[in-house]
Amino acid sequence: MIELISESFRDLAHNIWSFVAGIVSAIFGYFLPIQDIVHQLILFFVLDVVFGYLAAKKLRGERFSARIIWNTTIPRMLIALVLILGSYVWDEVYQQEFVSTYKIIGWFISGVLFFSIIQNAYKVTNWEMLPLIGRFISQKLDDKTGINIQKEADDDHE
Image (cartoon, rainbow, N blue to C red; front, side, top):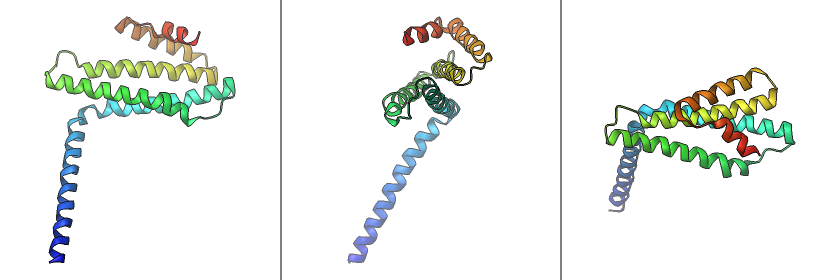
């Protein structure tokens, strides 16, 4: 009798695990079309942290602080990912095919992160080509969105 109850609990645990694994797999499968955007954003956030740290170390002699990453970068990355995932769901639910909102949001966030990476890389290397690339990206974002990230970045540093 005890063996039968034990076997029943093992089967129940296995079935619960199978159900949870199926739900998680379905969620990953649903968001599979945007995996490239998500991976690129994560890569850009990691590169932004690396070059930001190197610039802070070179310019101000700051030491690495995990608290800064947990207080700023991780929340920003999570918000960016939620915005991308949410806009993808929005586009899918309303069958928005004229303009893919999730691609526009991903493009803009990636552009801003790329601009930040270029700024910090210039601070680390003083390579003269990097500000030219930064101005090009800034101009491209300004042309497409009307938002001047160069001016916004300058205002933030004052």
